[in-house]
Image (cartoon, rainbow, N blue to C red; front, side):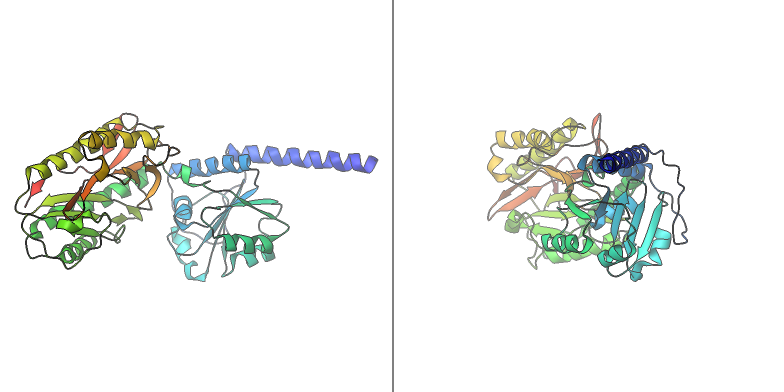
Amino acid sequence: MAKKLEKKASSKTEQMKSEAKTKDAIKGRTKSKTTSNIDFERLPYPDLVNTRLNQIRFRMEEEKIHALAVNYLPNIRYLTNFSGSAATLFITFDEIHFVSDDRYEEQIKTELYDLPNLYTHITRDVWEYLSEKNFLKGVVNLGFEADRMPYADAVNIRNLIRPMKFKPTPNIVEPFTMPKSPEELDSIKKSAEIAVKVYEKILKMIKPGVTELDIAIEIAYQTRKLGSEGDAFPIIVVAGERGALIHGKPSKREIKNGDIVLMDFGCKVNGFSSDITRTVAVGKASREQKKLYKLLYEAKEEAIKNVRPGMNGKNLDAFARKMIAKAGYGDNFQHSLGHGIGLETHESPIITFRKSDQVIPDGCVLAIEPGVYFSGKYGMRIEDNILVTINGGEHITKAPEELIIL
């Protein structure tokens, strides 16, 4: 009986020590200094990264996990700046373990942020290496991004790391990467600036006889020429009746007089995306087309004016959707009003009438893109990028107020 009481008391003491250590780590009071097992040319990093790590650690405490395995590459980049194609990040309450393979051994020396207590590991088999090296010593519950990892992989890893428990913790990182740091925002703005400049250049080549594919190729060329790292997503150029294809691929269809031409494209700067859509008319436009363009512009601006931090995305969607429906075109606008932008072109929050759990945080960047489409005739969409502030949406890009006729 005495041994049982002693064991119980010892267990309670260890638990209290662990909880105290956890709280200190979360509050940023751990005294251990920055260390690493690789010589780095240290990179400064946005202050917001520290906030993200602290917020993730609070969630870890809520989820009752002692460490978190992050395998989704955009999330890893938000936290470490790593831009390669293979890595796993392990976050504990007082350490960060970055694991990649030998292809990136040199790259990470100059690319990773100078994070406190960062350790790097080079291996081709992350989970076998973890089992052998046991660098997560003392971890009982290891959380993982259940919404980012295939089920079969999760089952296999669970069997490899026993007796450690592998606990699903979906959506544990993304809520804290939606707000963008000043440095990240600067990259998005530069990306958007390139997109706008290219759009202005492209206007000069849109005329009868030029194909959708010609325009798309020129957009890709000009964006790279001005500094984009690549297309943010496959370029969309559709004309005339093909404009009803919301995500249509550019074809060899030639532009004709009287066509409505829709262009949707974005750029990449330091990994961060822009995403704009512009609609123009060639030669002439009907009264209805001019009216529709004005309607889309005003619906977009109404949403931008009314966005606020903490708002539900469904409510923001309603500002634009109600205007379009009231004008009689509700059935022609079935896609979401918009989405977040960052390292991924389509991030949370999703601005849609179909979801009621998308909360818009302060400091996030959104693409707002109302559109109407008519099968066999044409389609129109206007898309701008904005920064969410307490005073409403701040334009990063701004489409022309009137339909441009070329």
